[in-house]
Length: 230
Image (cartoon, rainbow, N blue to C red; front, side):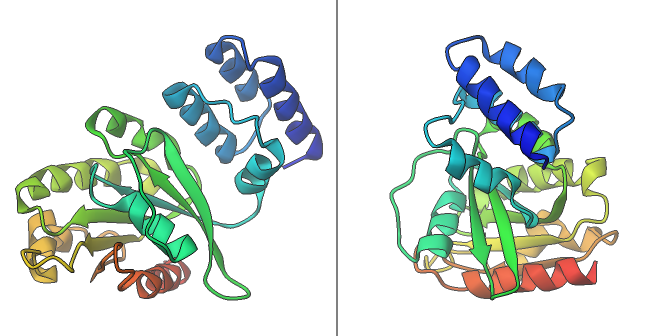
């Protein structure tokens, strides 16, 4: 992004930190800025958080060139726990995500993925479509121990994959919480989500445990391979 746009955005956030959020959003849209700014606008609308306390870190995260991956799924599927474990190696206490979390995963010296963890609460799902610009892979997380919500997860996945911006984008389904004794098998999850019907894109499903860190690195390595193949 052009330096002038970065500076302008910073000035706008400082100028409007105590002003109406809609006024700030209106100014942002007139900067001809990239998709990361639109994500920020969505975040502002959702949370009212202008994130100007640490602007240098914020702009580093928002504007560095990196493969964009979106992490979605129902609430309580374990997305934030998964992302925190992946990035820090630690289990961190999390709360329902309002807006999104974002972090950069370095797979190796040459490969990095920017992972956007988008809140999955029911009232937030209509906003999922606002986060899809430049998405190169969708990672859909399900709680494999909660068979009762599989139909809801199936509907949510089908709806988001119908978006034009995700046409042909590869999908990785992560069957989380496989460490629990009552978890469903990969085949059961695949059937419940009707994954074989998605013949218009690459898709894979893998088991994992965000709590224990099992299968996470392998899954994201597979995601990177899918992106290169698509």
